[in-house]
Length: 339
Image (cartoon, rainbow, N blue to C red; front, side, top):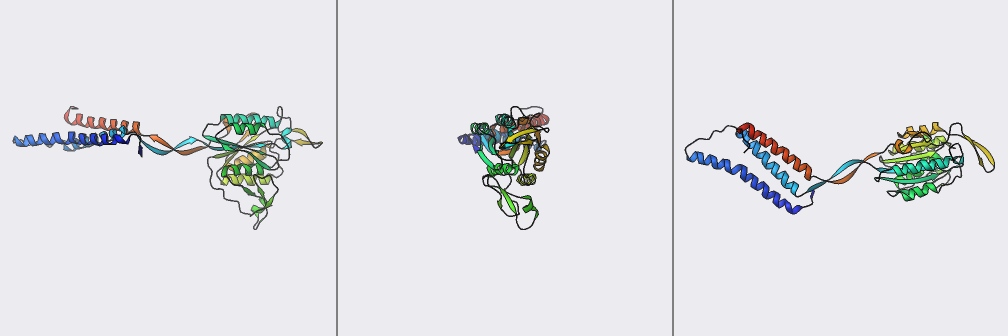
């Protein structure tokens, strides 16, 4: 506990001393005067009188402390933490089954999400295609995140595993490697997916890395869900879940789909909401349909705690008033008067 006006603690001590004198000395003088006159004082209500006196002294002590404006650092719940937007910029996001394109719709949804976040939430952006690429580190500013969202263009294939790995790298502050499903299932090795560098699969141990616990972090993936390796995406989601990170997914596009032209070839593409739903459910997150749901409101805000200084003046003063009220009620019941 700290005091904003510590010099007033001396006043508090004098106030308590004066109160002790006021509640102790008069009864003793009265008893001495009666004894000197040959009268024996009646010992009725001595316990109630002592309790009342103690309450008055305690109330004065609390009021004295309140004068010094005490404060304490308490862990208070608030909406906060880190949100990392993972924006799909693969070739399929050029499809026009969202107006004017899937990427443009994803950018609109991402911008609305960033604008809706309270100041206590730091926001980062990761753009991903076949390799995740960190664009904007999480920060409490919004300009960098909004600029990163708007400057994206389409290209490459889709790797949701890379997206989640890169977002986790932003959250934990170190490169994250997601073991491939084959490596995790077998004993003794296999391939792995490395997040944040956009490289190809590299050897890694079968055991999933320990990332610590980040219960105040959320990854929001905006994608059409078309992925070259769904098993790897689910393995990445499990790694996020083990770290306490929710992955909320937002589907962009339609189930009917359309075609896109890539290197002169027409390719069919459609929204894969099933995979996006599985990823979200693995981490305790939620799947949202970008065409119908309010993404900014639909993503679960993480409730966390943070140490904050809280002034206790009002609380101590209120408690002192309660104690004085109780002391007055005891005296009124014992003597029929307050003074």
